[in-house]
Length: 443
Image (cartoon, rainbow, N blue to C red; front, side, top):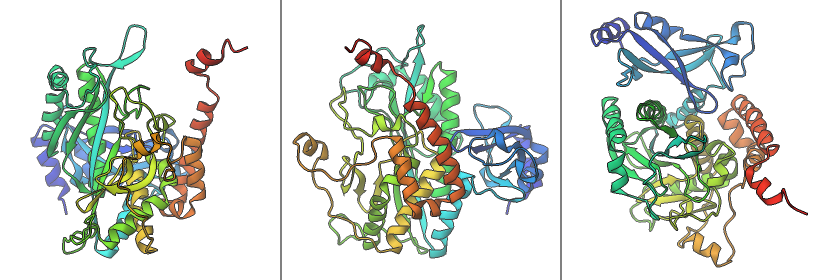
């Protein structure tokens, strides 16, 4: 239990005058306000107040006791922000009317985590953020920040890393100051695309940490004259960005629940059941893990300028097989569906709910895939079922998947579906440059 007054004194001794009380909206975008550090007790017990209808997806009205959204500070999350001197960052839980808010995505994830805790289990999540560094030119056209970054196969390009070393070093030092245990920084498979990996954590802490990663990256990129972009597929001829989840479970004694060293894939019966749950609910999961119109430009059998694409198009799993939506790796699972535009709390919560359904119903996984699915596709052979091709189909799948909607929470899903239906309708009614080029002169 943290002594609040001692914490205030400690923060003030470090030069902190304000706390940024951060939560995220339905889209997974960080929101918050600055509040005085002296009133930390109030921010912990009551929360910082926000007008509920001003936040995407709360479902709160414009008047009454439940019109106000309160972000209650989680004091263990307090961290000094290296890019905002004098300010500490705090993660908040959403409340309204004195009760946990069902449409708060962090509360959604906490409910799923409590199901694991009842079993004495812990879900560990390693998140792999891929992102683009973008800039607009004089004609307001988007391009990569580095005009020299144009290799045919740009993965691991050290020259690009050298040219962006100021941004990358600023990221390294900022994340390290925030307590991230960095594992690697590399240039990804598209021009202007990077990946920064850091150590895994329990599910809730991993989601909190990714939100802090995004806040840091936005601030650092702006300082260096670029835009940190979570857009899944900015450029048609290049690979997109994923947000892969590396998943593992441990029991109360710290033993790996997914692992069986006698199995060819090193997976236990429970691990296979979790895989089966992911595949069973994959269509509905796509809505929450790939929640934008642009997400489905990534989830396509597209050509890549580098000759390589890692897009997880088909509902299959395999041993170290990056062409499947689930990749098994030495007794853990890599869930390759999510992209960085997702609300990370909702995406992890839904992923966990699907896997637990597989365990609780003892679902049987299909045979693992031991081939390159892209080569099979090119050969015209029969393929495994594929994921939804667009956001509209994914939203339909979420509506149809009553188990997953109930597990994630009907209130949250109702808000999510309403907002995302409008997004899909807006896109469906827009007219693109591609359509003019193809049809304007059509006889």
